[in-house]
Amino acid sequence: MCGRYMLMDDPALLEAGLRLLDTGPGLLAYERGEHLVALNMTARPQPAPATGDVVIESEPGALRGGDLAPHAGVLATRLG
Image (cartoon, rainbow, N blue to C red; front, top):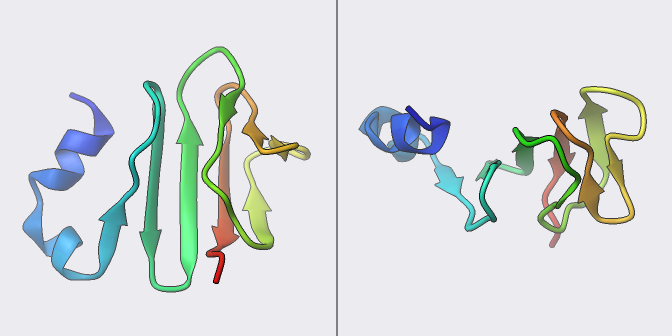
C-alpha cells in the first residue's frame, strides 16, 4: 500500500497537523509544523516541493537544484 494512503487512513496523524502535499508519482511530501518532509521512491530524480533550509538529507546532495535524488529523502524548513 502506498505510504500516502496509509497516512490518510490514520486520522490521528492528520489531526496532529500533518498536511500532505500534491506531488508527482513516486514522491511523498508532507508538512508538519515548521518542517517539510519529501521522499523520492523512484529510480529517477523528481522535482521537490519548494523548501527553506535543509535540516537533514538521506545522503549528501540529495536535494540539488530543486530536484530530489532517486531513492532519497529530505527534511527541511517550510518556506514562508
